[in-house]
Length: 335
Image (cartoon, rainbow, N blue to C red; front, top):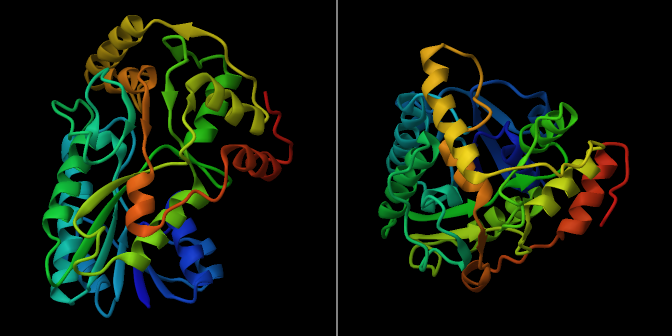
């Protein structure tokens, strides 16, 4: 198959490209930059921006499927910047699929589209957990819109599915694990609340595997067409356990300190007000959305993904931590 991966240069994107090449597919990546790692894989690269409608539509030409993984992520930035990438960009991908008769679209969404303040989720599925309301983070708000338009586009000519992987980590991660390690080493990392709230995470190979499984099963009228699915390792753990496991695997000091939710939420609100006012650079250390996410139980049921496209996590958290530690030149210490 000829497959377009948007955002193929990112952490998940490179795992998708690598796995697709290994499976014998002809892979093209649509990126904002150029990535030598993709050259090594033999991936054809097209440079462009998701907000450029003509470029995105042209990239879809001749494709048998699209894995739409590119998005503006992060916890901070203007709503317009997120909307251009995540909503307009997704609309452009859909337009490209229509114009060039691409029959399959696997969309990388996010569990944050269901965020509801401090409302816990225990064993939820896309059928039982409603979309969020009054989302304070532009990332979550725009990903919600994007997911809705992707699922609404499913019809008798284009089969679509949305996957919501939760907190992806593993070797090659340049976001989650490095940030945790940096803050831990600087003594600036605390758990919001007691850190005993349970959350799901997803090892990188499992996140990619879910996309491959969905792609293999996706077709017009398939059980997964027009539906959304939570994706994770299916091993919910206390925040403090998974965070300290990642820190140990990275050779960073463990964290025991806590901060009450109300204090973290107030700090987040203050940061949101001060950052633009003082024109501070980078992301604030806390936001209201982040305080809610870090203090609340969120774990999901993988049964629908297993039932509809055969997704079963193949790499356990324990094995993933060993691989992460090995990539860092050390060994994971399990508690």
